[in-house]
Amino acid sequence: SHHIAAGTLGILAGLFHLSVRPPQRLYKALRMGNIETVLSSSIAAVFFAAFVVAGTMWYGSATTPIELFGPTRYQWDQGYFQQEIYRRVNAGLAENLSLSESWSKIPDKLAFYDYIGNNPAKGGLFRAGSMDNGDGIAVGWLGHPVFRDKEGHELFVRRMPTFFETFPVVLVDGDGIVRADVPFRRAESKYSVEQVGVTVEFYGGELDGVSYNDPATVKKYARRAQLGEIFELDRATLKSDGVFRSSPRGWFTFGHASFALLFFFGHIWHGARTLFRDVFAGIDPDLDAQVEFGTFQKLGDPTTRRQVV
Image (cartoon, rainbow, N blue to C red; front, side):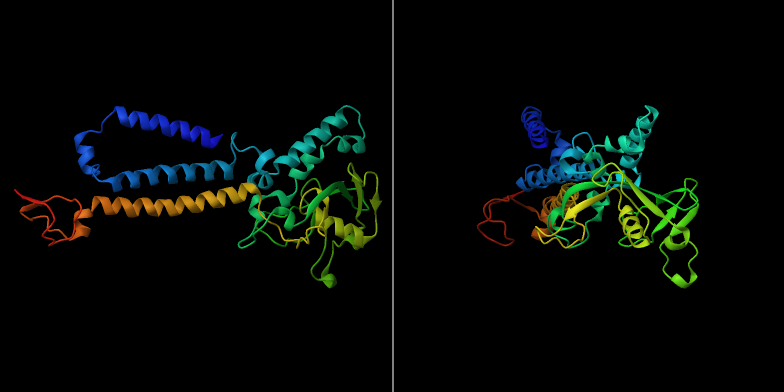
């Protein structure tokens, strides 16, 4: 659809330039008698369009829906889908549904968007290939884990920021106070899962109603909760390596921004060649003979047509 729109605009622009001539000053200033000016300005139109679509894709717009290209990184940064999920769950609770029923009404697709593996900025340099070759093929949503300490506080795992590869496991209560963690140095720990007595219970998804209280399992799910909603991922089928890849949104942005940069340099190159053609040709501007640039353009070539002023 973008190419249809861009092509239509290009045809209209072409008809405009066929019917409306440029002013004389502009014609001379931009050396419009030289075909390389046409090349330079055409390249400019292409790189401008490429930069625009790279921006609309990366930051998101109505023309780049998440259903086709995946979420933007800013939706992870702002907890966009997490907020929408909580809004729906709270709406369900307000209708006297249980926690399990409320979470079970969350579509798997919405839960999947709230997973860091769909963040286009998680793909790293030189990580080629599809997302399925990274964390694997998503099989199903395990459900939403709710962590609680032995005092009954509901705990929330602090989520991994976009540009981190590893992140400490920290569980905070509703007021943002740290209540539990997975310590680096066990000798100095005060908030370890074992000491605080953290348990986890799942609502919705495949593990709906299942709870765990053994520390090893609780820590496993706490680590996975750092990455958003928890999914079962098949890494065996495609021999996936477990390292995140970027989404089509990221690849589109990267590709179009890269070509836009190359075309920008092409525009500068050919623009400079056409504007400073006499300089590059080595012709003295004070030359009294009028040289017509035709078949032969080499300085001192006796076959070059010339007209004495």
